[in-house]
Length: 319
Ligand SMILES: *[C@@H]1O[C@H](CO)[C@@H](O)[C@H](O)[C@H]1NC(C)=O
Ligand SMILES: *[C@@H]1O[C@H](CO)[C@@H](O)[C@H](O)[C@H]1NC(C)=O
Ligand SMILES: *[C@@H]1O[C@H](CO)[C@@H](O)[C@H](O)[C@H]1NC(C)=O
Image (cartoon, rainbow, N blue to C red; front, side, top):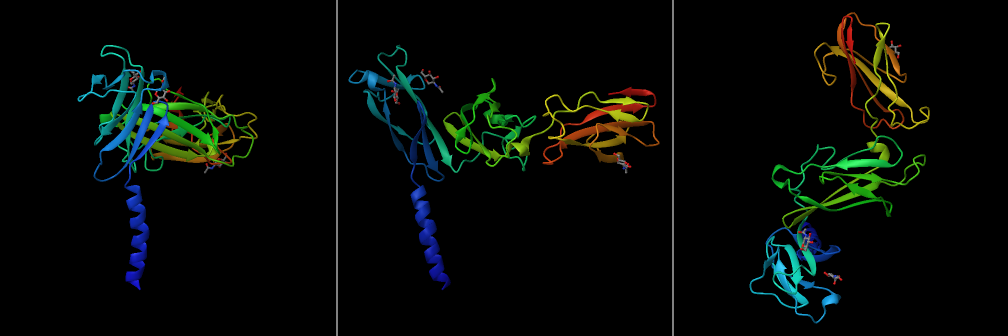
């Protein structure tokens, strides 16, 4: 009985895996061809290249990464053999010192990705961190290249919500994107936003994806105008970037006092509490402490803002 099951299992698993052994050649975007290569021994892949209709029947020849190929490769329609991870930028020319007429970049993507180009932000977040200051639809995502791949370049960023594209703009240094979803912020969010980042280093291409609801990444900005009055009452304001009216998108606040000299992240608590008000009256004996306050969306219990703080040293208060 067991042996029979194993046989059936193998028929299924082995069948699937022998299918996936094949390299898939895909045109990811204009001028970019991706070879999707399964793990294991890397076969030589023959990739057809064309200089384009415009140069049909003309004597063009090819360079790889700016260097003439050896043996030389001549003709509008050619085939290059790509072995191991040796992709590159293939350009066609009329003459050895002439400009490129057209080009095709061949990149190799391992299946599944090994994820060597980006560094994990945290186990919970994965490789991409996304955040939004409110529900208006604007959000940004960042990533970090690993120490040895700092030259990796972003090829393509795709953001979508239920098949609708969301426009994004890449940071100048390629370490993040800023996107603007046109969805109405007052609608209940039914579909996740999905983000795909294609990034390459030499000829190695990797794809990183993330999917989330806006409500999961909305993090209020640091609370402004924190001040102390009457010696015991701290007050602050809603962030300017937070949605108005405040009653609809209400914030709740965590307040705490920690021992003098400690940061707001420390566990050295004197007191802690929560409130919906933008003021809090402290009732503690010590006159040296650090007062800390941060905010989160009351209804979604989403990410917390960064801490705002005041250092109290008897009559000296600095916020
Ligand atoms: C450049 O080559 C691509 C194929 O790789 C082709 O689709 C495109 O039309 C060519 N461009 C020109 C100007 O011929
Ligand atoms: C590939 O070569 C073309 C033509 O020289 C150039 O315009 C393009 O920027 C190159 N792309 C990369 C990724 O090297
Ligand atoms: C927490 O704060 C509320 C007012 O916001 C106050 O009534 C209550 O006494 C506080 N609790 C503690 C333990 O300080």
